Image (cartoon, each protein chain N blue to C red):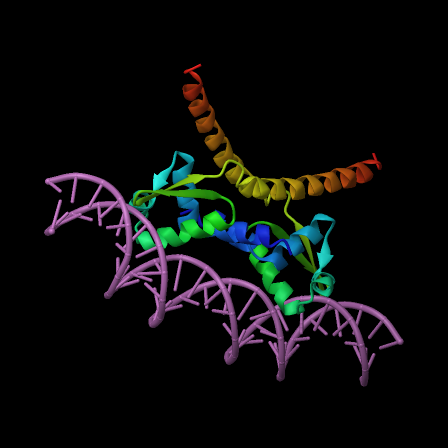
Length: 105
Length: 105
DNA sequence: TAATTAGTCAAGTCGTGACTTCACTATTGT
DNA sequence: ACAATAGTGAAGTCACGACTTGACTAATTA
């Protein structure tokens, strides 16, 4: 079910990948620029970027010999919405429950 | 870094686990009640519940011989906040950029 | 008390995912 | 042209995670 969210959540479950997102939130960066502070190979970064690209979080463009990655504007909103929906559903239920229990006053 | 979010995102990356959360959003349920529609063993469900419990999404209580699981009120908010923060950071940057580019009019 | 029900424990299987290395292909600066 | 730079591709390693089975315990119910 919803392989979309599957890949998205699973992608963000990796700390290196979230670190990449964090870095890109401050602005676009090249592959080797990302590899530096993260203590992994450029190959690893390239693989991570591919994953993040496939789930719509990151956009990538290669000009000349350097590939520049940047965040996709609404790439994270599915996550946000999913969490928000569950939370509001739960809150509604708990409110109803509180109302019912409150009747006894 | 932040093993908290690590486990949280990774937990939600599993479709069965998200299905459990979905089910629990409608109200508490026992282990076997959860196992039924999901087509997996009760053992598997128990393991999933343990994972969800460890990352603060689910609460569990065993009375008699039946263990009942329910959602923790704010268990998903770290996810929501993380996504929202990145989005707003990105939007701010893009707005600034648009302003600068717009100067030329 | 016997049989059913609800869940737990300990292993074991099987796939997948994060990383690396090494060789290789563009590009760019001297 | 030559050397350095930036990244890609194909293997291969290694650990971990999802799930199952089978034996077992504890609480119900007939």
